[in-house]
Amino acid sequence: MRLKSLVPALYILFLMLPIYWLVAMSFKTTNEILAGFSLFPQTWTFANYHEILTDPTWYWGYINSIIYVTLNTVISVLVALPAAYAFSRYSFVGDKHLFFWLLTNRMAPAAVFALPFFQLYSAVGLFDTHLAVALAHCLFNIPLAVWILEGFMSGVPKELDETAYVDGYSFPRFFATIFLPAIKSGVGVAAFFCFMFSWVEMLLSKTLTAVEAKPIAAVMTRTASSAGYELGLLAAAGTLTIIPGAIVIYFVRNYIAKGFALGRV
Amino acid sequence: MKTQNQRAWLFVTPVLLLVAFNALIPMMTVVNYSVQETFGDNLFFWQGLDWFAQVLKSERFHNALGRQFLFTFLILIIEVPLGIAIALAMPKKGPWVPFCLVTMALPMLIPWNVVGAMWNIFTLPDIGLLGYFMNHTLGLSYDMTQDPFAAWVTIIVMDVWHWTSLVVLLAYAGLVSIPNAYYQAAEIDGASNWAVFRFIQLPKMKTVLTIAILLRFMDSFNIYTEPFVLTGGGPGNSTTLLSIDLVKIALGQFDLGPAAAMSLIYFAITLLASWLFYTLMTKNDNKS
Image 1: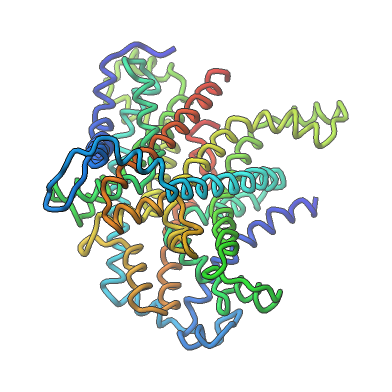
Image 2 (image 1 turned 45 degrees about the vertical axis):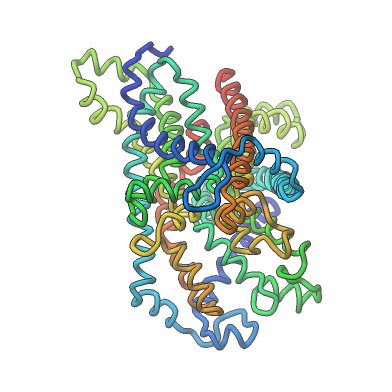
């Protein structure tokens, strides 16, 4: 038994090592980093964090990212809810084809879309807005949300719908007061996954923004190339991007696997 | 049994419009570029299928495609067995379960460019933890920017670090759904550990493992940001995977025609894989 628990322990250690190194770097001074190897910060410094939290180009990167991620999560889940209900309850002309077509968008390489997206969103005047990134991320997040919600909805017996209609509920009232509470963990999981994939994606968000809506990812790459060797600053910025994910993951810890299985465990 | 209801189309219309806006218009742009030649100033000339022929024959595309398949193959044969092994060893209940789930899922929530930057810092020869350990403690010469082999090992290990947890979580979800009675029955029959795995655990994990394998296949096939930030496709072109090469051609050299033709061929390959994914999954759905 002891030996068996060694496996996950070693695995977690392996996962934590690069993260530890990033965090340790963020508390070192540039001199210490360049002077050579040290396992722990010798002189602790908060200068890197101080710079990020006081310089608008830095902290607006985080705010921009959080704005478009939130926007995307709200849009994706709202439009996916009725669609997932339709897929889970009704059969209609072309339903299977539509479902498959949605899936193909989840699987499309973002690199294929980078240039056409730039032109499309420039043409409609949305380039460099939060909305542009939020809408672009819908490409892969809506299919994902539909899939996850459909999985959870199919787990709710159809009798629930029928009983509600017999009791005289109208459809909107039934959906809002009975059905939504019944699948609320599914909604939470779908929202979590939209948040996650919008938060980690960077090719499209970088392509679609310049100044006004620049995500933290783009701020980081520009700093990495322009300032040369500001590793401590880069590490601090990276460390700060881990925190939102760590917070939201705690809330859905028991449902993560079900979400990845698209609600099909 | 589902009800026939054509009004369901109303429910899916918002999704349809939003996804179509994002998928069909850009796709038409790509198709448009793929059959034309441009010299700037919005002057376009009909080119027919020349770009497709050029891409399909080019050695550069063959090499990128070969590297892509090698990468995807390697991460699959490492991540899937490793993920299953870790899931089998994880505690089924108790206070450690939430801890394991949260820490294991953490790498997946880190922005992809930060993953690349983090591994870059981690592997720097004299400053990074791994780089220092390899070079100064073990005495190996390990430098990702010079040695293609080291670069390959690093992007594989990075992907294993990043995504093995996906397989673990899915396999674990399959395992905890097995009722205890199955194990008790196996114990009465005196089944070996291997028999329990082969005849009880593996069949129960089949659906989730199918999803895990195919998700990993797709996502690794589309991978761009992490290896790009870590190696930039180098040294030389040794780690230039398909997406990296595509972005180089499209946004770096602005060769729109060949880039568009390559996009469509690339997309066709992923589409084929998506179809496989879909048929396998719906087949499982029907059985259960």
